[in-house]
Length: 326
Image (cartoon, rainbow, N blue to C red):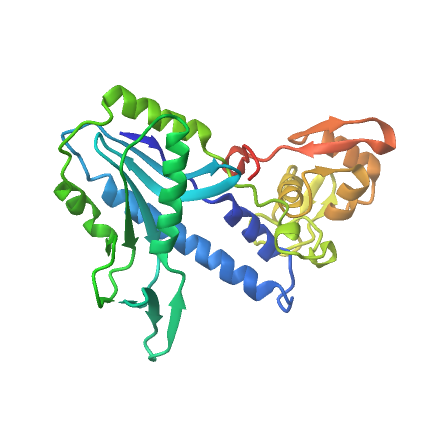
């Protein structure tokens, strides 16, 4: 039973907004593009894993949760996927790497080898899994639950995988996961069906949503590097102008009344989650504070304060909603 599905990482939305609002030659651009590429590729690999895991239909009760972050003694640990069975819990670490992977022993190392022969050591996913298993065991024991926890490393790409010596955890490709799980014996019942369901619901309710906003703080970018203006939703060009009670794009001819709402969302993700009338005029290039006031009054925001000190709290859409901070 699927208890928690995987949602797109909200940092992707922030990075897309950031990418649109920094210059082509900006010193931060390369790391922003690389981070965005890695997150999008990772999400693609994880959803591919979810698809194969959905083929697993065991005869015993079970629960599946994707992308869960828990807190154990002020330490946060994120798990790509969790499978709860009557006899054990399985944590999956999904990796999205297109190149050849070499797993060396003594000491255990994961190495990425490019087509030109260049090699790059990777962060050891087994060490990552050991850490997560330790903290999940601790988290469960605080709730009087004692059950074995296993780990598995799954590679999303069907690339070449060379393992010199079998490591302590299973390593495979994502397409193999369903068949592999069917070989794992469930010979005793530590958790019955209601207990599995209660534990899965507890894990879901304890999930801590990661909040990457504001992006300028996370990536140490000066606000002056963020280009102001209303972005055209059709051609993605900056500097739409408010004329004749509409936002007008001189590049493609698009016009609309509410295109400033996207600018508000960008401001919230990039700068801060509230905005003043003056800041709104600056960021949208509006010249009239009275027009700005009327515009803000019909936008998805909440007004806090009065007069010159009034600030508007920006409400993000549900697709990029942040429940709590990590």
